[in-house]
Image 1 (cartoon, helix red, strand yellow):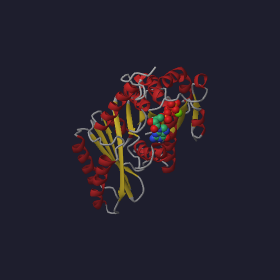
Image 2 (image 1 turned 120 degrees about the vertical axis):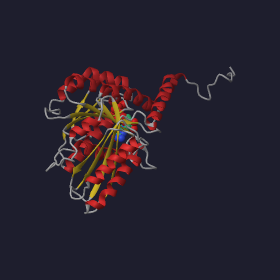
Image 3 (image 1 turned 90 degrees about the vertical axis):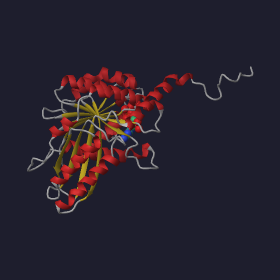
Length: 358
Ligand SMILES: Nc1nc2c(ncn2[C@@H]2O[C@H](COP(=O)(O)OP(=O)(O)OP(=O)(O)O)[C@@H](O)[C@H]2O)c(=O)[nH]1
Ligand SMILES: [Mg+2]
């Protein structure tokens, strides 16, 4: 699928750049334009993509400091400029626009729903979100921002693919230490999804094409993605079990929203050398995902790429019932209460139960 990427805020810009790099490295040519938008000048300077600074009149290039209402208001005020900046980024052949942001901050969190709404009015193309949710040990303001933003993003985009920052974190690493590694993992998975059906020679009927990705991502729904890979045998017959066990690992151990195994629709993409891929294996994996997710709408197909390994992508759409997503929303609601009453809250040293001496 030919995609335009718009990274909003710090996380958005970095992840957009990582996806573009993964696309170039693999030679897929699915990413046809990238723009990074931020209110913080210094966060744009390190990026090797086209950039745009917004809100300079209000925050002088210093970011919005996790104030997502300010982030939304700045995007609203400067949206004309952003849309003009997309002239060279969104082309007639573009099949989807992907907005990317950390939903816990200010610029991306507030900016994504505002920009999505305007883009959907302007373009006759699907507008998707890739939203990063804060890890469990991030502060209350991030949880609150992300909960608020997620609700609005789900409403204003054609679908939002979610990632929780704890999902692919290695134990012992802080969130900040692992950003680069997490961003690479996001890129590796997203690019397979975007590139499936692109740059494929000698397309067979079992090959996934972009319409299957588009049809799996349903309007108003939240989605998650998982990935796993394994060495494959030169004999496709021996790879039936390799494909099914890899699909199992992708769904059970790697989802971008962990512990998410039910969905309304799903797509299973099996990437590998056509000489090694087994049609039977792909069909078995698809059937297994059907029974595991309880979805009657599971698409499956292959993505012919050279190499000795087989990789499986599982895309789940309609994951509102995910327990992990529910516990995130609980966290966000609780954080909103804390943040609202925050400034007046008494500490242990300022309690009503003890009178001051004088
Ligand atoms: N995966 C990942 N998450 C990030 C990265 N940078 C920040 N985050 C997460 O994104 C959220 C904060 O969003 P940022 O992108 O830093 O905020 P912003 O949009 O720049 O907004 P302001 O800085 O408030 O103006 C937090 O939950 C962070 O954990 C990154 O490079 N990768
Ligand atoms: Mg920032």
